[in-house]
Image (tube, rainbow, N blue to C red):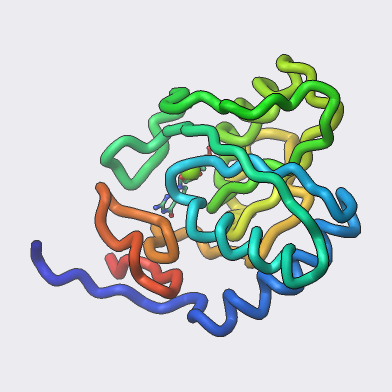
Length: 176
Ligand code: 5GP
Ligand code: MG
């Protein structure tokens, strides 16, 4: 693998502090027994940290997983959202918090939200680590967001480029 320069945007400590604050916001929004649905794959690190921050804040969260993909091996969205892994959790009648890594155009979360509502979820709220505000194409907005993200391709903290960089403890942008 050739060396790629990565600019750190959000370091480990900054992310941890922000997630503790987000956990309080989740509790305000959904109460002390929130039902989280983690949108795989990129958000698994964020969702795991948010889950434990919720526990520290006195909540008893549930978590399910759904696999959605819009990028494939590219650094720009294909525009098509593919269901890669179905949710096993029953969401009928529940208030659900979709947890994703990035809100970019909003297509992925729009798709996920419609799917959960079609399965009878009472309400579906959106929580993302990063909000690329400049790229929104849908009227949908995240209810909760960790950080505003510049319009650059980012990796680390679960986010990948063709499978690489997920293990980095920070969020960084590829230098072009
Ligand atoms: P949207 O459907 O909102 O346009 O795109 C959101 C999805 O695209 C995210 O869940 C994420 O998987 C992927 N994505 C968007 N921007 C980036 C980025 O900068 N880096 C990585 N690794 N994935 C991204
Ligand atoms: Mg994603």
